[in-house]
Length: 278
Image 1 (cartoon, rainbow, N blue to C red):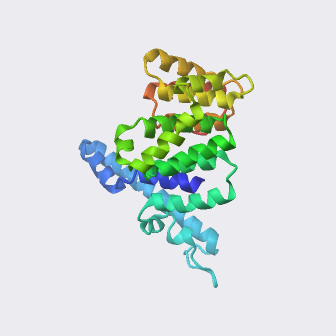
Image 2: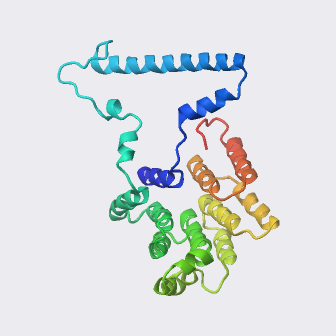
Image 3: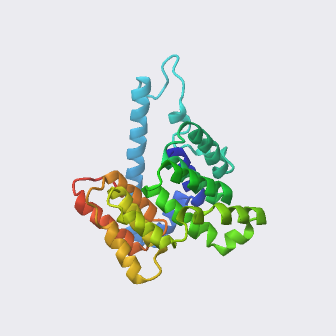
C-alpha cells in the first residue's frame, strides 16, 4: 500500500528541485555578511553529515577507514541510499503502481483500502471503467464506510460530472458508466441526500460520520454547506489519530487552506501529546 501511494505521489509531483540550485538562488539574495554566515553554516552541516556517514561505515565494517571486512558486500543502503538509481529505471510510476495493485487485489480483496487505491490509480491513468469497478467493489466490501462513501462521491464528481473526462471516453464506456455508475448505488436520491442518510444512521461509528463530513465538503455548493461539513469534521469524538491523519491527507487534495488548518487544529487539541505530523 505504501509503495502504491509513493508511486502516485511521484506521478503527481514529478519535478524534484535541485538542492544546489535552490541553495545558490537563496544565497544570491543575501548581503555579503549574511552570505558568509549562511555558507559557514552550510559547511558545518555538510561536515556533520559526512561524519555521520563515516560512523555508519564504521558500524558496518568495524573499521574507521570505511574499508569492508572480508566477505562484506555493499548493500543498497551503501550503493543507493536515496533510491535515486532505482527510480531511474521506472519510466511510468502509474504502470508500476498498477503492477503492485494487481498483487494487492489478489491477496487483499476484502480490504476496502485496496479498492480506494485502485480508484486512485485508475483515475490517474484515465481508466474510468476500472475506477467504476473499484467503487463497486469497495461498496460491496463495506457499503457504509469512510472510504466507500467518498469513493461514490468522487466517482460522481471526478468522472460522471466532469464534462472533459466523460466526453473523452468512448461511447461504450459512457454507456457503462451511465448504467452502472453511482445512480445504481444512490438510486433516485441526489448525492447529498445519499451522504446525509448514511450519516444519520445511528449505528455508524465516528469514522463513517467523519467520512460523511469529508464527502459533504467535497460536494458543498455554498458557504453554509461548507460550514456545516466543517462542523461535522471538527467533532472528533471517538476518532482515532490514524483516522484523523488519513482525513488530513485527503483534505489536503481538495479543501481550502483555512479548512485544512482548522481541522488540524482540532486534531492537535484532541491529541496534544502526539508529535507525529499530520
